[in-house]
Amino acid sequence: MKVEQYGDSLDSMAGVEFYSGVLCAGFVNAHSHLELAYLKGAIAEHGGFASFAESMGRVRGTFSAEERLAAIGEADRVMWQEGIDVVGDIANGATSFPTKAASRIHYHTFAEVFGLRECNLERQRELLNYPNTSLTPHSIYSVQDAPFREVCQADCDRPLSIHFMETPDEALLYRGEGSLHDWYKRVGFECDFLHYGSPSERIVACVPSERRVLLVHNCAISERDIEVVMRHFSTPVSWVLSPRSNSYISGIEPQSVELLRSAGYNINICIGTDSLASNWSLSIVEELKMFRNIPLAEMLQWATINGARALGVEHLYGTIEVGKRSGIINITGVNLDDFALTESSRAVRII
Ligand SMILES: [Zn+2]
Image (cartoon, rainbow, N blue to C red; front, side):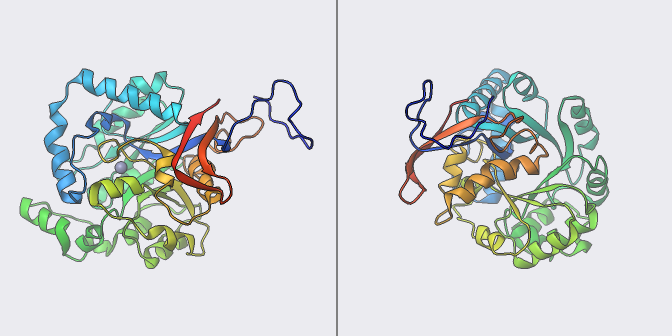
């Protein structure tokens, strides 16, 4: 691809194509679970976090291998068509890898370690045979102390992607309260990590300060969480927002974006769609429509270069520059007077 700058009008130049709306670099979907694409529409909306987790367990086994693969292929195709160049993708098993190998999208796969009673660490290590794949702990409430530390302190040049503060119950667990605590008590799960005191304190005690980390969801973070995390890390921490997933699961509109924007640290905000189990589509533009009164130019940074930085591919993706591989996306239906998205805005890949 050739990138050049022109000072003069392009109107009379041969071979120039014009597009209405915004042209920008291809998007980075910083958090998804491609392997769950077959669960599109299978779980009821707005049931809340506990009901979502319970439904996941119930419906997961009711789809054939063919149905799963077809849904994965379709989700990959649509993400490409709608302008996504790069995906930070969570995997629990191997089903999504053949699609990823054939895809034009660049995937970084996080092989997810979880389990309070039986941890799947050894099984997940087998997934490291696939390209661009590294281990990550699922969250600060679903992995015991030793495997959490082990995963956070190995392979330090790869990023971690940790589900973080999707619900206030994650912090309440550390205080012996809330629905997560009640559930664990009911089923007899013991946690050996509550002495860290809070989710953010567990992160900084276990993750080396120079490691790149994506914290995903952040619905229930406090100013103190941001301070504890940002003071610890010497590399930029990426705070991934997935507002449509939060809306789908809990019907909430998280307020944390303003906390992050006004925190006064070098905060790298990114956008993730989460999976089709908890979203109506895997569209970055639809995610951006959820944020009100935030300049579109700022949000496009979240959706492009910030995500590329989070996944360590900023030298290849995230901006339109000579030597990079980024696609070019046309966002139509933009209100050009206010430079803002409208209900009818959508993204189409040009290159
Ligand atoms: Zn997720």
